[in-house]
Length: 265
Image (cartoon, rainbow, N blue to C red):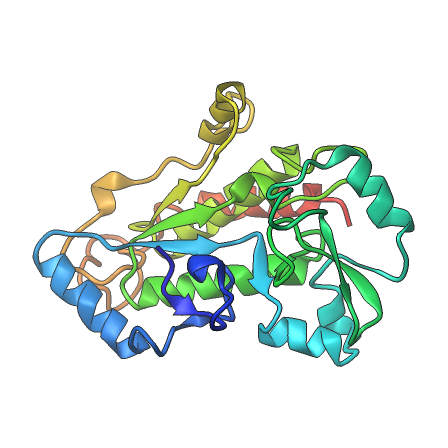
C-alpha cells in the first residue's frame, strides 16, 4: 500500500498523493522510512513501495498552483474550458467506477475548467505529453530510492497516456514512458526494480515485458548488493565502486535521448 503524504479523509486508500517526496505524517517521517529500509536490508529484504504515476491528489501543490491560475502547473493536467473535448473523450473512454465516480471529468469551480479525473474527482490525471511531468515524477522516484526503496510498484500504469479517439488504455506511449523511466534507473540506481500494476486483459500483458523491436531495459539483478546503498556501483564513493571507471549502464543514456525525441510534442 502507498504511504506517501495524502489528504484526509478522501485519499482512495493512499492512492491520491499530495506529496510524492514525503511520508504521510500519520505514518511517520522520511527518516523513519530510511531507517526502516536500512533495517530491512540488513535482513536481506528489499522494500516495495507503491508509486502512483497516473494522477495526483487535487490538493497536491501542483494542483493548488493550477487552481490559482498558474499556467505552468495547469499544463501538468488535462484541463478544458468547456465540454467539447471532454465529451469526445467520453465517447471512447470507459468509466473505471461508473457507480461511485461516474464520468471521466470533474468541474473545478476555482479554475472554471473541466479536469480529467479517471478514477475519483479528487485524483487529477497528469499530462505526460508535458515533459516536465515526467522529469518531476522521475525526480521523486529517485528521491525515494535514495531513502532506500528498492522496488516500486507502478500503480495504474496502462492509464498514463491520453489520446482522443482511443480508450486511453495501453497506448504505445505508455511503453515508451516506462522504458524511459527504466533507462534512467539503470543509469542512476540499477539496483531498483520496477513492477507494473497492469489490470488488463491477458492479451495486453505481453507488451509490458517488451518486444523484440523495443525491449524493456533488462534489470541488472547481478548488481543488487544487499547491505549497500542503492545507486550506480561505478559512482565515486559507492562501496561497490572498484575497477575501471565507467558506468555499465551508460549506453542506456543514448537510448533515452532517442525515446525522448520520439514522444509527440
